Image (cartoon, rainbow, N blue to C red):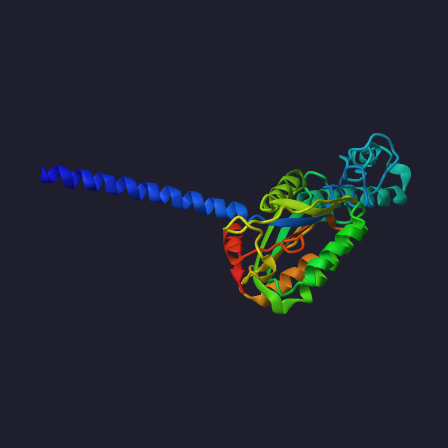
Length: 328
């Protein structure tokens, strides 16, 4: 009888323990839902050349065009025509020394074009050409900064920029990127966390990688309360955050507040960012991503949270939503 009672108590204890764990997890998730925060967003662009609307093809400059009939050129600049071969077989030998010079030029040009093709001269513009749409080198990079909320001037600065910037042009998007990086560089004393990510890919997959990064960050917001994307400005009111008692939380006095700013860039060419091990690495990364010119900048997303006045981002929120952050 005693053994049965002990067994029953043990089973009951396990059940109560399991029930307690379920309730704890449920309540913690409810608290996390109450701790939702607002976000701002600006940027735009597309994964085409900023200065060209048509697909780009490799077309090296120079080369001998040879208007002597059907050439053997393969699209890499003119080759040489069939009549140039005749003197080698005893035809047209009386054309003299000038024709021999032309033959030499044509053969030399043929060799140069093949060397260019074999050595990959068409990568990133090659030897005077343009890059092909499918094989062009594209970098997708992200810099993320967690700042102490003492840097309160940063939020109004980003809000003002989002409301006034022309994000429908490459020059406007470049200005948005530069102004944001300048705003971050003006507040190094408030930097608390940082992380970077840079990937080199081609034009075919770059847009998917860019969208993946952007959507991952946007999904962390409870609402995008201010956005300016491709010159489409939208504003929305943030939902009030409730405290544990069900009343409006006094967010302005909540300790441990943070601001997180994310910069995501798609750019032509190489853009390798340093891994973050300290404030100097973060400063270098911000400068690098901010220096991408409008001629290389394909697309940009700048995101910041919280955006709405009075909203807060606690230390727990940072730990839960930004696990890749490195402490500076």
